[in-house]
Each structure stands twice: as structure tokens, then as C-alpha cells.
Length: 113
Image (tube, rainbow, N blue to C red; front, side, top):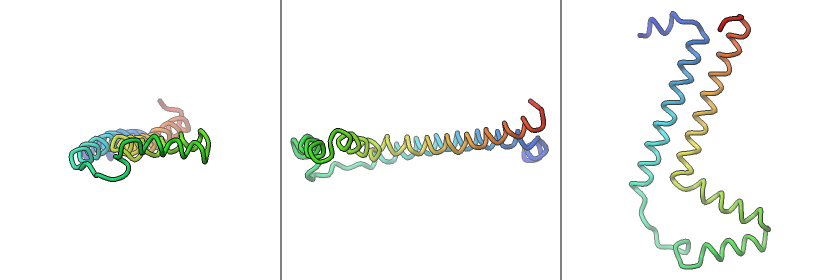
């Protein structure tokens, strides 16, 4: 398998690396989400108190306007387990896209398909 991989064209190796990065990134994101959801404990603090989030959003809206309230909501979404898993998946996709793009440029320079 390794001999076949090393004997292929450079652009094919880059594409294979891109697919490997993409697949492993999605697998890591799924594992991260599963671990975070399974190990999540309910913490009793002010954030769980009745009306706290509504009060927080209102205060942020008064101090920073609608954009501040929207950014606070995005922060909460991105720090949730599904948000963290999506960040991992997007980063893996961007890294894989780099490998696909370099392979495409190499093929374009050599005139091959």
C-alpha cells in the first residue's frame, strides 16, 4: 500500500492526504462531541438561574446594542459541544481544501487532468 502511494503522482498523493485529513477531522469532531456530551454535568450557577440569560441579553443589548447581543449569543453557541465540534470540522475542511487546491494547481501547471 505504501509503495503504491509513493509511486503515484504528487498531485494524487496530495489529494489522498486531503481526503485523509478531511475524514480524520470529521471523526475527531464526532468523537469530541460525543465525549463532551457524555461527560457534561449540570452545574448550578447563575447561568442556570431563571431569567439570567434574558437579563444578560437585555443588559448586553443596552450596553452594546443589537450587535453585542448577537455576538454574546454566538459566543454561547460556539462554546457549546456542538459548536466546538463544528469548529474542528470546519478547520479540518479548510486544511483539506488546501491540499486539494495545491493538487489542482500542480495538475494545471503540468497540463494534466
